[in-house]
Image (cartoon, rainbow, N blue to C red):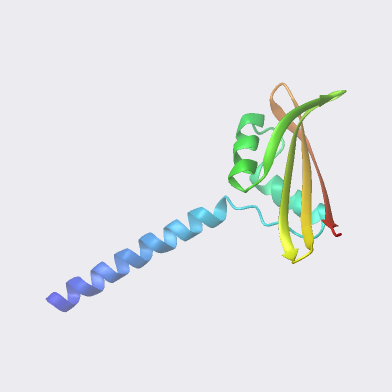
Length: 115
C-alpha cells in the first residue's frame, strides 16, 4: 500500500512540474539571429489585433525594455541585448505598431554590437 502511495505521489509531482514547464515555455519568445523568424515568433505570442497593453507585458516578461513612441505613427518600441562573446552583444529591436490600442504590425531588426 505504501509503495502505491509513493508511486501516485511521484506521478502527481511529475505532472505538476511538467505542466509548469509547459506553461512557462508557452509564453517564452524564442529569439532567432534573424529578424523575420523572430517576427514570426513574436506574432505567435502577440497576434495582430492583440491589446497593446498585453503586448507590452508579454515583451517585458521576455526581458525586453519597452517604451511607447510617437513618430508619425504610435508604436511600442522594445529592445533587448544579450552577451554572446566577451566583446560581442546580440540585439533585437522590435516596433509594434498599433491603432486604437490594438496591434496592427510588428517589425523586428536583429544585429550584433561589436567593439
